[in-house]
Amino acid sequence: MKGLTRKKRNPSKEIDLIAFVAHELKNPLASCLMNAYMLKDGLLGELNERQQKAVASLVRNLEYFDDTIHHYLNLTRIEQGNQKIEPRPILVVHDVVQPCLENLDRQISTKKIKVVNELPPGDIHLVADPALLRIVFNNLLNNAIVYGREGGTVRLSAFEHGGWWEFSVWNEGVGIPRNKIKTLFRKFNRVDNPSAPKLRGTGLGLYITRTIIERHGGTISADSEEGSWAQFRFTLPAVVSAPSGA
Image (cartoon, rainbow, N blue to C red; front, side, top):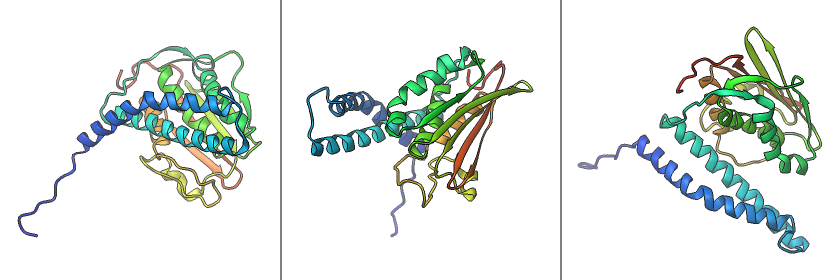
């Protein structure tokens, strides 16, 4: 119609709104999730079978919303240029991997996953941002568990070559269709795999993971045999001198 003009989208305002909503929901949701875990574990009284099923469904939904909020908070930091890297000397296993495995212990136990740690003895010394690397490992390990076979194996390994550390997260599971691998790390990308469990997600985890690794000077790639296994490998410089955004 004449005289009517379509209002232009303002991506900056959209990102600001997402950041505000996600930030406001973060703490109340964490409190709800904690209480739901207490209910599920019987700490607030014994539940009958029907109540247990209802609480298990409640926990799954709250965990989904919690993951979604954290992904959107990380996305807004990236889009607004606020995701600063604060590098310092770290021990990868002590400062990054172990906290992630402890955080995922409930999911590991629920699916009876066997985590095989093939990281070098001792520890791996890097200069990097431990908080951001925890996001990387948490995303990759969580995916390995979620899309892994119940009772299957998740294998974590690393080796050094030519001034780089190469890390690998491998899992037994549904795998990834070969024609979907190239688009895995795009923003809001979801892999439609008929053999995979129907799970909700934002399609942001691998995009955020790739962004963090690239800002540390590294690269990430994926490989898979559909119906059998999937593997994510990423590199980080053995010494990070001046990361982007520091």
